[in-house]
Length: 258
Image (cartoon, rainbow, N blue to C red; front, top):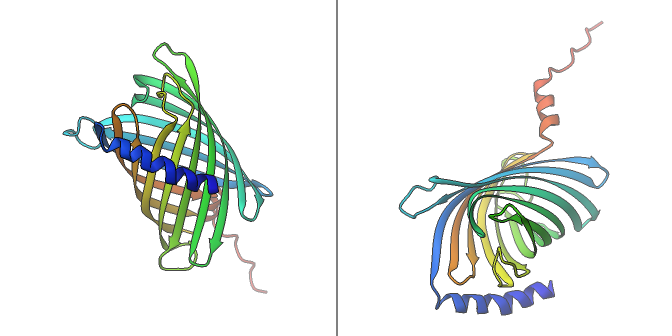
């Protein structure tokens, strides 16, 4: 936690002070993600995710003008303590057109490990997430090149019309995340990769299904800095198949009165 505070204090002002005097480009994007999770064993759970991304380029075109990326991935989560969860994941990204590296139709295979620390109080939840990613990026010659990236995120979640998040409850959230990477030909020589700020609202459709609508500002410092405005709609489902079976299965017939 102290390391994250130091990074925020010293890296962010330096990055933004440099970008204030440099040329930058901007884009508007729309992204959505579907998450499906369920318990697997004691203290273990699994998760599948599917995501897609559209980008507006050039700015005069519509927001859904260019379908740029989709991904699929899986996670295994272990709740090692009341306030700690560790996870391992593998994700596959298919990029139809991306800016980094600048090319058309490439793939990425990403292996991730992360730990999340939870502080749960009445009225809010605070999390600190540390994620290490081993990114394998395909270049124009179809060769894969590796990049290591560390992501540090702090997030605050606040229920609005209840003390806990459940069916019928709205909640607000905001997060701040920094990305630090190893230098590479694909993603540049910079160590500070990007900064991402998110703010939005969520709603508990049921106790096991949530929807979140939020805005993300993604700042990428390069020779020409990038500022991406990303509008997101995410759905999360917990125990979807068992819950559907319960709803679709008719109740057993009651025994006749004697």
